[in-house]
Amino acid sequence: MENSLNLHQRVALIAGPMTTTLSSIVMNLTRMGADCVILDPDKTVASPFINQINDAREISDKYGRAMAIQSELKTPEQIKDAVGKAATTFGGLDIFIDANMIQKPTPIRLDGGIDSVDEMLDRHLKLPLMITQSVLGYLKSRKKGRIIFLLNDSPVAKIKEDVMAKAARTGLIGFAEALAKQTSEFNVTVNTLTVALTEEYILAHDPESKSIKEAMEKMKLIDPSLKITEADKISQTVAFLVSPMGATMNGQKFSLS
Image 1 (cartoon, rainbow, N blue to C red):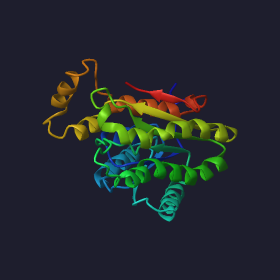
Image 2 (spheres, helix red, strand yellow):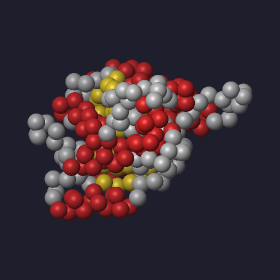
Image 3 (cartoon, one colour):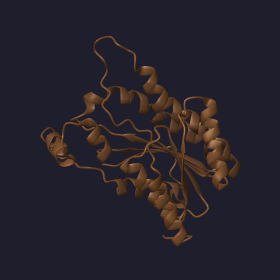
């Protein structure tokens, strides 16, 4: 099992702002030996976090390294430059994880306003598609690779608040399923992983609550069965999917509750 989950000499590109989930994924993958590059469109990845990962590498060369590339990622040129820099830094790319999940409520406007649609689609659907296209050249050349798109799964208590997010992000499910068929000849797998109540989702959807516990208690009044999806559970599932053991998982939608 240990060898099967060894990611030594693998390079993972992870797109998204710093969250508890993203930091857990990076820490888990680097402990398995992968080098990780975070594409950070919001400039939220702090240097101490990167230093912490690289300090562990100094102690043991079994661990991978980490770096963050802070870019707006709005134009094809910016995306191509960022992906190219990531590939050059650690000598290629093997894994792409899109973690540009939508955490804040996105109810559809009932006053006829349509001003925020372009921005949401650009960030949460168009950007993943463009990064994927840029990454695929590197994966194809290596004749192996993993692509995972992370999505939130709205609970009943919050589904009305996530209407626009559903429109933007769930398009990646059909995209992953179709792309998986095109890339299978190059041993590149493409999957989606849907997660339920993460810590960052809960806090963003209920900023008035003083704690996660208080926010969860409110939601449990509507759905008593709700529970938080722990970050380490998500990162362990991601690690399995990007490891050699995940080679047969392709074009699938996986869900964590």
